[in-house]
Length: 182
Image (cartoon, rainbow, N blue to C red):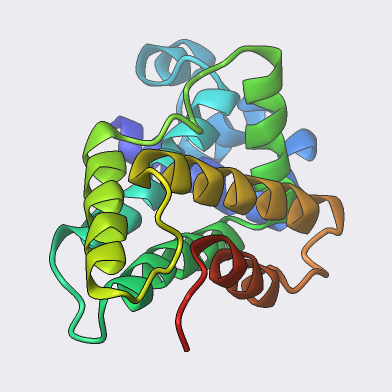
């Protein structure tokens, strides 16, 4: 038995029945383990979700690691859209639970990795130099504003139980914030 096997079984149950309907005992039964074995590998059900979201950030980090032949705006937007794809895979129920867990105690789920922040700031600066991003503001502040816009739209998507076109809202919001040149 290992943590990954337990996490995969738990996520399968969460998606099938909903986070609140799944008890630790259900996960143990699915894996054929005891509760002490579960807690040996995993501190809590919430911890499984928090790691799940952390894996979603791997996609963003990979997206901003290189360059995009279509330019900096495409690369930045692509990173956010990749995160939307991951969040839609997680689903509004589980994403809501991740948010609630972080509201109860800041687990750092929304603290973006320094490598992502630095890279996105560099891409914004490159976009400003090339003229693709017309907003001449501080790249760090533009990054923060972009991230907060994304997080607000993510919250609305969860609140609307997935019935919200956050892709279109994100494109329009980022275009206005960055003053994208057509």
